[in-house]
Length: 129
Image (cartoon, rainbow, N blue to C red; front, top):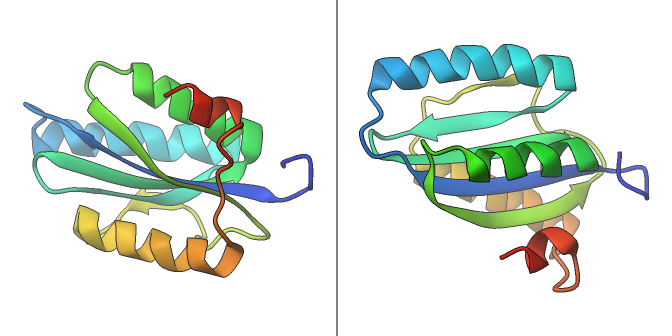
C-alpha cells in the first residue's frame, strides 16, 4: 500500500512492433501468474501493435513493475497515462481484456475521475520522464 494505506492505479500504453498475438498470449500467461503472486490486478489489451494496460496494487510494487516494463525492449514509446492512489482495486484479478486499447484507457479515465487527479509533478516516477 502507499503511505496513505491506499492502492495505486496506473495505466500505460506502448508500441509492441513485431509482437505476434501468440507471443502476446504467452506474455499474458506469464504476467497473470507473476502479478497474482505480487498481488497486482488489472487488465491488458493488445490490438496487434499497441498495448494498453491498467495495473493496480501496492504502490511501490506497481511503480516497480512499471519501471521494469519501461526497460523491457519489447515495449517502445512507453507512455504513463494515469497514476493515482485508489481505495480498492476495480478488478478481481489480472487478465487480458477483449477490449481495444482505447477502451481500456476510457475505463482507466473513469476510475481516475473517481479518485482525483493523481500524479504530482514532484513525484519521483513522474520526474523520471
